[in-house]
Length: 248
Ligand code: DC
Image (tube, rainbow, N blue to C red; front, side, top):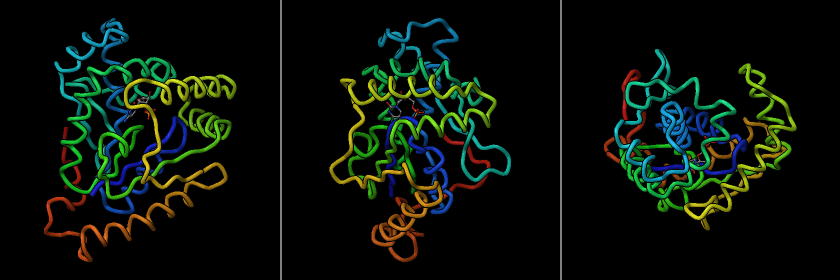
């Protein structure tokens, strides 16, 4: 079963999606990391990020894959072919550069197929912008996380500070407004709330409150979709792979 978690930049999707996956014993797929990995790889080679045809041809030359740190339950390493992208994909430079990559229709088609293929392998929490609306329109549970842009900027600034990245609030706020504008208004797969999604405004909620609210609903949905044994014998309800497994 799929739990789709969508929402704008800085709405806390990644932390919440990972925590929900851990608590539910589900796989986790960060679709934004896929677009980011292509953006970094293309930038390194001087490819014009607005040239959709070249970008797509280039992205097809390598496999995007996720891998686990030793002892981790969820994957946190991202590769483009053999190139490890993990340390670069969250930089402010990539924040700014990734929008044209994600808006490229040629590339989105390939990503969609890949994301569907991965998500068909069992129980997944999938986070992104178009997961409930386009990638998995039949997801068992769709969550749309929001928060006012100032709160999102405050959170991102704190997060960057912890990671040793530039954390200037005003600059982050401007960047988020710019990405909102692009994500909501782009022609292909714009950020929209699916009709059957549950919208959670997290502005005044702690991360734990948000996670708990989602886990409460997800548990009920899983019992209904997978049965009381969690679908132990059902391929569509398989939980986490063995630690150390790699998948692409
Ligand atoms: O969630 P994120 O900030 O890591 O996403 C990076 C970029 O990719 C951002 O511009 C939105 C875009 N994206 C998308 O268009 N569709 C997705 N399913 C996930 C991310």
